[in-house]
Amino acid sequence: MRDPKSFLKTSKSEDCYGRDFFEKVQKANKRSSTAYIKRIEQALKIAVPNFDTLKFEPDEMGIPHFEAIFKQWRGHGVKYQENDFSDGTLRLIGLLWALQDGTKPLLLEEPELSLHSSVIRQLPDVIFQLQKKKSGKSRLSLLLIAMKYLIIRVFPAKR
Image: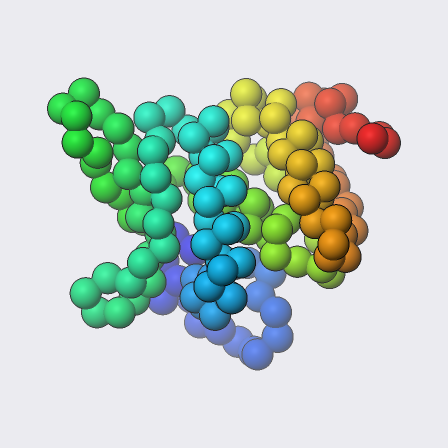
């Protein structure tokens, strides 16, 4: 996702490494895409210091990018594109999109990698809330493989 052009796509099958993530976001229903990005934005406001806004827009050449605006002391926000995001922020954006978008089973292998411990503590509730909002749609089947005790301890068994 950091540099989608640096990877060669080997087949038309589903890409488990996220190389086609921008393409998926761009092809998604506009209304759904806007709602997903708004929810991701709300989560990032909690997880990332000084985070303000997340947009998905094409650049001058028509290539789509995620653009984030961060608050700063001068009063006007500073813009960054996905190549400036931390690994944790990129993983969180991809994870939150997948949790909202999919109806297929989702394997979350060590979703806590590159995430701050305060974000990890909130991750189980975020997953639960996103699944709760999918009441009219079929819910996602999750298989979670976590290495940190913190995420296992707080993940709700039943609600």
